Length: 260
Image (cartoon, rainbow, N blue to C red; front, side):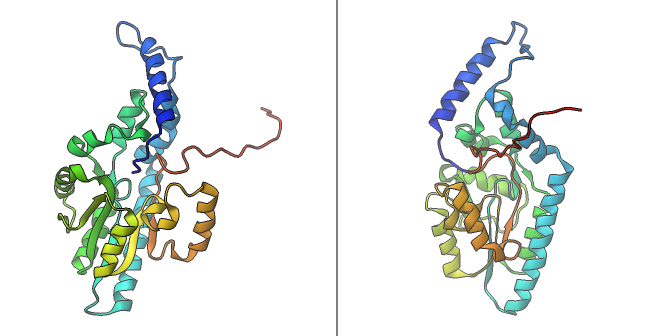
């Protein structure tokens, strides 16, 4: 989850919501011909929440993470002080119900002004495969740190959510939330452990090389530079609902349009 504000998008979302509301009849039915800007999120949300493919990819990611962690444990031997870092949102827990609710109300969820309420009262679901992997890490004596850009002011609520889901090693000192940059929080773990794995759904979950103000083209270049780490000690999970790619222009085939 990113907390970057987008004032222009927020304004457009508000205007779209106003237009949408104006087309709702007295009995509450919307004109089917009226679509708001946020309808553009629907395909990505449908894939992220409902597809069997996303569940397969998520399980595949955690299966790979388990294999790589087994290798790291074997390579470091007995007595090693190992740790892993995992992001939370769209890596370990699924928040798409909030995003769908906002989209259906023609509200742009990428301005994150409904997120605090969700952190306090929302009921995210576990990503498939997450529990098995984290329980494996815990059973092997590997320290688990949850490094997330959820809000510090809601830390007790996030702790309660993670505890209710039954995640291992959930504690005040293992949940490192928004405040210091993620790089500083990673360094805190590295100062006390041998960090052998990171898991996340956005590239800034892994390195300061991928902070949100790095242009997308440069992000692609840096992915090439770090290619040997992906699938080894950096495990990336798919997220089709938000990211630094949101405003990217699409490439289009320039052939004349024809149907047959």
